[in-house]
Length: 450
Ligand SMILES: [Zn+2]
Image (cartoon, rainbow, N blue to C red; front, side):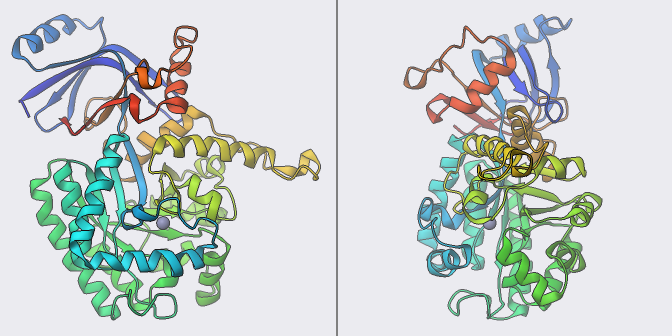
């Protein structure tokens, strides 16, 4: 990467939740570490001189009339489940896990298989504009390290967890940690080896302490993992209060709510990301907000497995950080474009309700709608906040991750662009109608990866 690069284009971002800004023909100045050091409007006094200097130095990237969005942050992906995306979505969650998911995940002990699937998945996600991904790998240590290596080498920013799962009542005999001590020791090795790997990955590869979810872990493992996260100040991820079954199982086992159990084991905090969280009540939400724990909202997956719709609006009001997750393969689509659309659609159905035999006033949950601008924030800055990194906006000090879209690509020319020139309309068109054919370039930390 050259010492300094300059990018010119039409940049869309969400400066605040629900707000959209178009920085038309702005210049982004980016240093050799991939950090934005200046954002210049065409009326800035040094715009012309910076532009001319970059042209002379050969460090100008001019995107013309194409549209530039921040890279998307996917907060929840089960990388090993990529081959079964779209399969078995009619089964209940526990059946889906036992009959499809666990047997597939067990195959990743074959590292050649792991390498080939992970290489395909990471390339696919990058091509869809997902520049940061928070991954569950598998129970197997070596295969989990393979995922971290593949993402690091492909230039994607990755937060990766070796999955801990040792509870014999909830995990298959041939796919579980052989003991609590082994689950914790392998997690510690994973943390140390991933940190080694990170030295050659300027965009960042981070270890994540990953109890699969409370039901699949013994109490000793949950305790040991909480202690590891504290010792190494790592990220933490798990699932929390996803559906009726899980939420109830934790209540029966501990006599407490899922969020409380995670908190008691030291598994919530400002570097913790919990998937789903559909059944959080007010006190759980307060616990999340106070501890800085973020929610990975996975709206497509939730429509299949969650028995409910995440009340995004209510949880945002309670001060909880929220971003989006594809939840491959509980969700069938790896695209955050698809997931942000579904977040809007699901919120509309939550507001209006779905059973037309009930009176209008009792059918839905008032004030639950979110807008496409709000969903765009969740996919960008919301995700950045969830992982505590300066991601998701075009501002000084932010990491330079973005995707360049051409709405006029012959393979998918978006309709009515000239009739709807307002920035929000243009952005909404992109978010609703763009396909991979429109995503021309993807950059992570100032380096081109697509
Ligand atoms: Zn999940």
